[in-house]
Length: 342
Image (cartoon, rainbow, N blue to C red; front, side, top):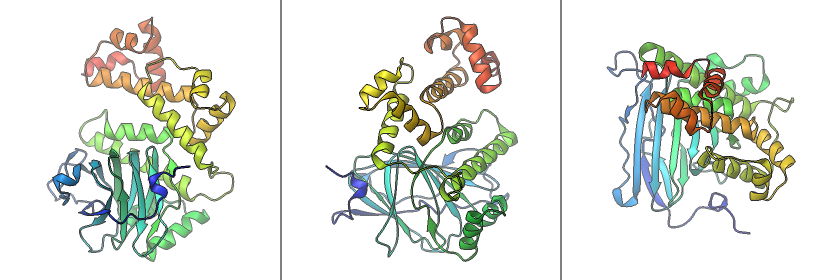
């Protein structure tokens, strides 16, 4: 059986890329940058045009910074930080697209992440480097924050939290030992961040609340103890199947789907498929489809100024009133309010 490239050892012909990926500063109020607004990244990478394509956008908030990276390389690359100065910020990564393996310099073992997954790291001395692979599209959302802010939101009475606090206080580099899937709750928080429905100071407030929600759910999934609150680890083949199903749904969410057809397509049975999807993503297949469709509807109403009846028809509703009822149940507002605001 052919192994996935993230499971292979280092390749001899890998290109070295110097890039300021994880040194995303937290700017103060006197920086002159408007908080809560995406802008071209201040840091410049040294990726040469013949090596691939790379674009980065930054967002600054009072307690966080956010970097969105999109890339595609022509070669396998080893990404290392250009600056070696101390950078005592914790990092949280969400992989919308991409396959990557992160290593602590001097360590032989790495941790893998791929599309639809997330991880957390603390790299106070810029010692981590990251393996990216040729011809793989990357879309990564990375959050940074000061350790003192993280310490302020950690629950004080849980053992996993105490261990995490101890490592942060002692400046011990760390990375989650395994990837965890991005949950439906986190997808909603990411949507509020990337497509914020508010403007001005209220937008920054909602963005910070969304990031805090993302981090709390991430840390719980990565570090919570086996007291019944930690998600069960599934076999890698089952996880790959679940991610393949989700990717198929993401690309074809406007089509009609049945459990029988999906189970047949992905060589499993309906019971296992339903259980596998819920265990991996914390939601059912049809709840996930509803989420995708409603997010798409909101984008059509807000960004493209479609009429409510047009959006209802696009989503397959014969009666626009039925769509409006479903939309209000999902978002808490009538879809006509979005068309008026637009």
